[in-house]
Image 1 (spheres, rainbow, N blue to C red):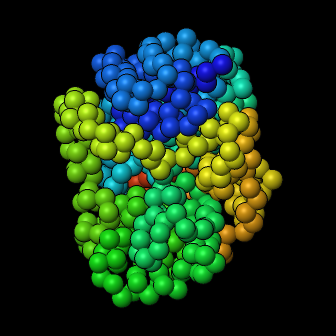
Image 2 (cartoon, rainbow, N blue to C red):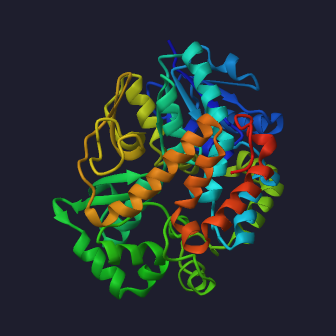
Length: 451
């Protein structure tokens, strides 16, 4: 029987196109029934056209269907991928604008800190609703989550449902490719162990054919101005703590005490060398608004690209990308085993010096109907304070989302490193009250909206 793969949030067109393309490259999924789900009919229509273009170009015996009815889509699915966003720009812009008003200058705002926490509070109820549908309609499916804030969403789902769920982020393999290029070795020949929490995982080892690449990387970061400037924040962290961290400098500048607490530090470390363009909230908001206005033309141009008619170019367009999802689903369906970095509960102290109830990002083995986290052991002592504190803030935020307790929201934000570096406890309380009031219509689990 053909595999059934469901994309919830299929209107996230970049992810959907790439992941559908990747899945169809495997024999286990060439004839898959791919079901696209989105609440926006126009984006769903464009996603459907895009995916059918891939099927046609590859001459795959696959079937693409689309629906706005999630439950109809999920019946008997083998795999479910989630790429949803709860609320448009008019909702989540306040996650950035309100902290900015109080002096907390956020760059991206989708992972942790006050902005990530409020995104989690809005999104967790919807993710749990999806999981309840999966438990009922396709309990044997694997759920692969790409939605941020990754760790908080996964922790909530893994603690309260029976769904086979893990979270995927491309920052681990993306950073590994970057470091391999810097070291002058083929990325596919690099071996590494990476562990921590999402967007704040550390390469505990990084080798090429048994040779430790860290000495070369440390020298390059200190002496090569171009390499240093490409990732100023992460390179400063590397020189301080001796291990390289995942995710871009733009993101990582938000997760600690050091780089965004004063305007001159933002100018020095977060504006010219983040690999994320200008590290400033106005850029993010304006960029998102621009994408909102031009996405239809971009998709139409992609569908009508003349390269689809050129065999060599078509082969390139259909080539498998670097995301984990298709390889995991292939293993889940009985194909070859696959090792990846996934987000799972730290059950049984997989990372021994992080809280056992937090969500960790560690090596995981995918096999037939099985997701098996691997024991890592202890993180280096020098990276534990920052990593453990962020993991604890995430757990407090999850408890707040599950209980509707505004005090836990306040406590999570109050312990956030960047927020605490800038504001007093009283100022944080006022900021959280304002953010709760702004989100009143999007937090059905809360009865009270003051700390």
